[in-house]
Image (tube, rainbow, N blue to C red; front, side, top):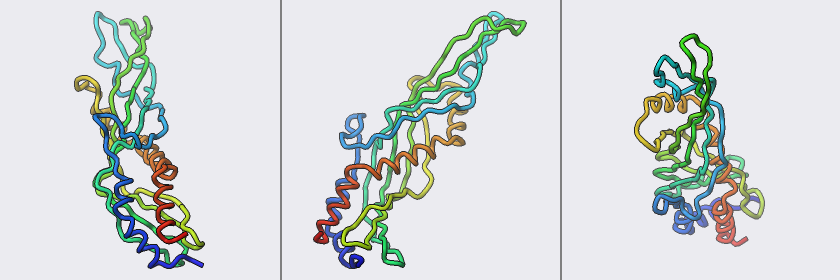
Length: 227
């Protein structure tokens, strides 16, 4: 027997303040909050972004010897601002309920390194030597005015977690440690067309699925409906 819709709606409304407080995430003096979920590291090959360009001198040409490697580490859900509960949405078959939590901003931040090998070539085209080079900075992926949509099963005597989704398309931007190098615009273009956005999005959904506060939310609602 499914849990009555009215019972679920009342429990959701009664725990509004507690749940919204639980889901608020804010950085602490440029450090992730103590309860901020961490995402897995990410690494991939990306097209050459020009790290070796502009290095010719004394008849020696410098150019990349292949693709660059992008590594993203220390990925945290950096901020989740103004979480607001929305009304439950019940499925037609009565088996599930969607519990949305809207927000003004959900941002993921991580440090990145792009590395490549530069080859130095003589006027005749023969390689003289090679040398690795790299740049560092930060990546930000953000959703604005969106929601976390938690899907719970209601067919039994207890609410059960079935999944979470974040509709919408995130944006991404980068910030380098020093200066504004010529390759930054090209790097931003590569990122916008690369699968890193999708990968971080997928990882973020997985993290919310296993985050402690997701489990606490489900348990809080079960207690509120008396099971």
